[in-house]
View 1 (cartoon, rainbow, N blue to C red):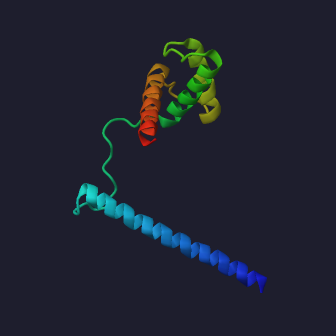
View 2: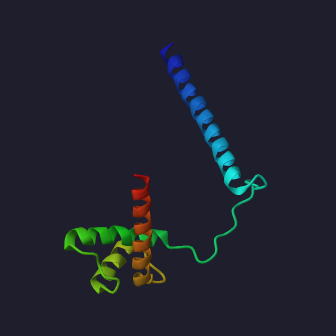
View 3: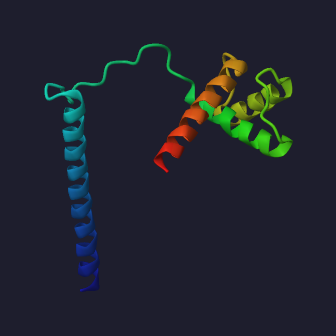
Length: 127
């Protein structure tokens, strides 16, 4: 008898989750139609973004290393700091494997800083 109660408890959880997901999808579609117009077809994939996609994995590693550098050294690393580039290279190869081609570390440092500053400003506006 206890096994049946457990089974029905799990089935109830599944039905509840399906209902919540269904309601969330309806909400997102209604919200998107309100923002983008009724004629928007949500069954088609979104058009590709213009330009080259960012190397988000690299930028994440750069951001984490920059935060650690600032905590340990007391100031942000410069984009031309060779020792910091060596640290980035070692961290990226540890996480992602061999890098081919070598990322432009100066560009990735600037891009990671911009991404972090946008994120921090968005967080402040939500508070």
